[in-house]
Length: 172
Image (cartoon, rainbow, N blue to C red; front, side, top):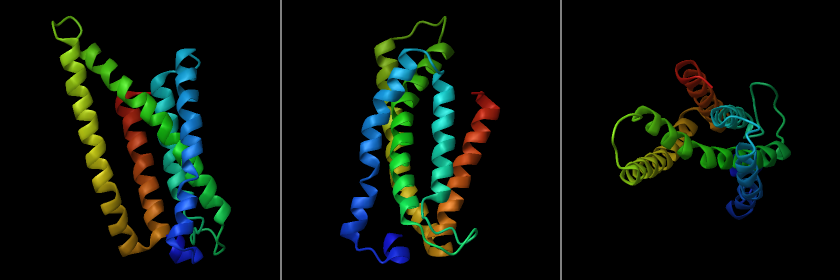
């Protein structure tokens, strides 16, 4: 994407993508602190982070031809950095939410807690791996078919539609 829009070499574009690392490192403990002090509910934090990530996907190319023709490198850097932060929030909150929901579903039934946690951890790792394999494949297919800017908008809208569906079905 950065080569296409900004003529940037892969070596330099890697530095742009690394801008998400400091935010990831800063946001993970921040999410934990917010939850520990009960300043925000876990589901609300997950919902907010996923919504924010969907919006960031829409603006991540810095080249939204739908709005204007100018290219904005600062927008790419900010979106990558904040995207790392929203991923950190999701990574620190989603698995505990899955475990809590499974325990609520099994409430009143006799079950081995350690075995349940192993199964849920395996499921979580499996789903994460599948998403990390299929995500780049689908993103590349969309980018080839429609171009990077449209592909990022489609991915952001898909993320936001998932968030809306989740909020309607499960609540926030």
